[in-house]
Amino acid sequence: MGCGDAGMEAAEAVIRAGLLRLGGSMLGEVLSADRGHRGPRAPCGSGHEAVFAGYRDKSFDTVLGLVTVTRAWYHCAECGHGLAPRDYELGVAGSSMSPGLAAMNDLAAAAGPFAGASRLLEELAGVRLTAKRVERAAEASGGAAAAAARGRAALIAARKLVPLPPSPLPDKLYAAIDGTGVPMTSRETAGRKGKGEDGRARTREVKLAVFFTQDKLDKDGYPVRDRNSASVIATFEPAAAFAGLVKAEGIRRGADHVRQFTILGDGAAWIWNIATAKFPGATQIVDLFHAREHLHDLARKLEFMLLDRKDEWLAARLEDLDYGYIDGITAAARQYPLTGVKKDEIDTALGYFENNAPRMRYHWFRQCGLFVGSGAVEASCKTVVGQRLKQSGMHWTVSGADAIIALRCREASSTWETVCNSPRTQTRTA
Image (cartoon, rainbow, N blue to C red):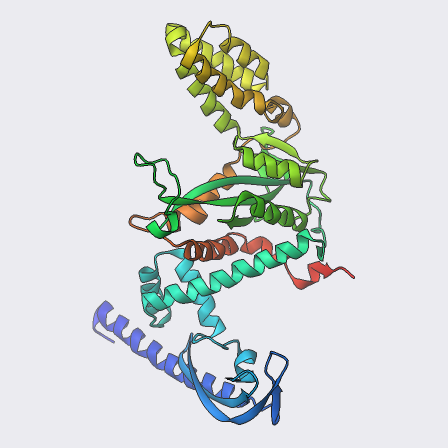
């Protein structure tokens, strides 16, 4: 112990390894105290009865190392397979990881690349798992989490599962919706059109929605998002399927009960189709930053007519936008006698503003104390998806990406879920 940092580090490693072995041994003894014998027969899970056939060992990894337990084994002649009731009770049926280690693995795999997660588990927890095993376990866990969430959403949307409204009920609830591309393997994008020079797709779009609440304004009168109020949902499924998830999450978050429900998004038609179909009474707001980007693009298209007045013209139109005066923008752009391709370009650019005019009443929205930006979901596109799934050289399968995104959505929503998503906050209909 007098050898400096190196000696101290070695001593820590040796003691930790010894404690893990001791803990694993103790855990094995505790688990083996109940050998899982449930009589001469036990249900097989498929409507038949399995017959006791003796005792067998099962080894699985835990946060304390490898553990082996001896448990009763039953065989079903009808189904032709065996089972151990004790495995289901311990949460290791069909798995080589304990629930605790699986949860630890999910966190590590969701946080970074699988090889890095493998190293992280070994360095911080003393658990050795190959990168491939980390990947397979995380994708299985994430896939199960995604399936469970979508199953629950289907029950909620069908009103077969009725969540109780949050308590206390927030004043305002928001749903910010967007989509982002995830790099895919060539098999996943085969036959799909993309934006590349060769016309081939290299990504698949994942759609996200972030739900959050707001009760207060800051000293300057701007809305402040309630702390730890966000829940995130995502899917690679088409907009029609995503709409059902958005509807269910809105119900779960209390959209039917809050005083003000607002949906934020860019100008994409699929977002507003979902909003109109699923929440016709909600306020719809186009993200102000996107609208300003479109206005700058409009000014560039008219630059050959505006010449040195471009900056002055743009400043006036930005002021029109801030006040929701869309007629002023269209009138100012259409005063120039354009024909042919240029006229078509301007008509297309103005169509964005004309089609979204009711969603661009920014002065009124701000007077009502509402958010006018969809930054919450754009940030989630970067943090939930981009930081983990868009690193250099990454190419995913849809199922693999969907599973990891499910784990990251669960983590991003963890604070709200802990408080509000317990069995006591929902009830099945009669």
